[in-house]
Image 1 (cartoon, rainbow, N blue to C red):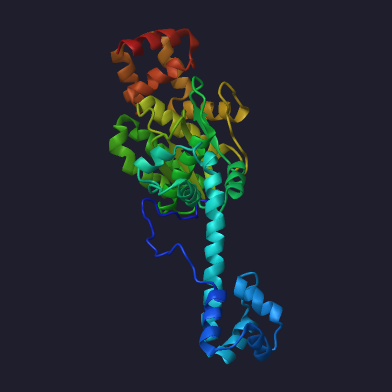
Image 2 (cartoon, rainbow, N blue to C red):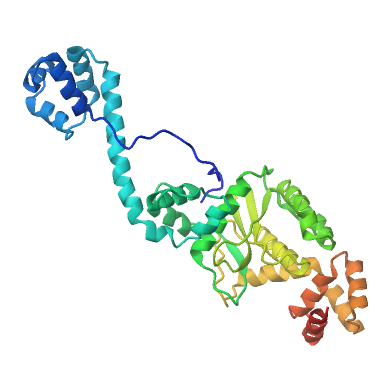
Length: 365
């Protein structure tokens, strides 16, 4: 769904909406009693059929503008009053019908992580099942379930996930929507590829810092390149690290979970998603199911690994054969990155002869 849709989270609009509505027919009947005339006499005065007047009295036929003007002349009640009564009554009937439909759709809504959305004050607590469905649709910025499902089908996403867990799609859609809303509040310049590449170099230097401490800088640096960065806690059964997507042709989004904020995992995910924005089509759909590997995902992995530690530099370090904590720290300092990233790259198997040694070292830390 488009990022420009604005949704007010945790804010309810308190509007007086009575659970009843006076029909034009009821008011018309009272007016006829006060005037002391019959429906047939009113029909004759208005030049309309008696059948129409009877149907308006029973609520079967609406009061249309032409009829309202005729009633105005005969009853001395302004045409606007008649039309307001008509619109209010029809809206009331529509709301009643909608309540039934929404209530019947609760089984669809409950597949989403409703309780978490409410506990985080992303959506307000509902008063009943119908209201729960209504608030969920408002959260997604759509009018109905069909429109919501159509929006899900049109998502253009690329995400890196844990192959050990199945991600629930409804949880994913809710989490993506949270990202859209938060990204919408980030003022970004138009995306510029050259600027983004320079920004990534600056961001690489931040890998030596605590992720929590540099989050504001990440958001600021990315926004100046046309990329909104959002860190959002997982929702429901969400087992992924991050996604990248285009909200508009000029604004991209990198959205990551808080499942892992270690330097290695966080930054590899970030540069992996950045690679998708740089290398792949803005219209392409990248969806990796558990255990699957696509050419685009593998390319993004290679790009991120090379950007963090050039292959030549890593090969030189491996040839030295010293994988002690001190050696790793020294090599990381030379590269201007966190030591955990070096260990992480070795564990990923970029240099398979030392992968097990590096993994053992990481587990002993």
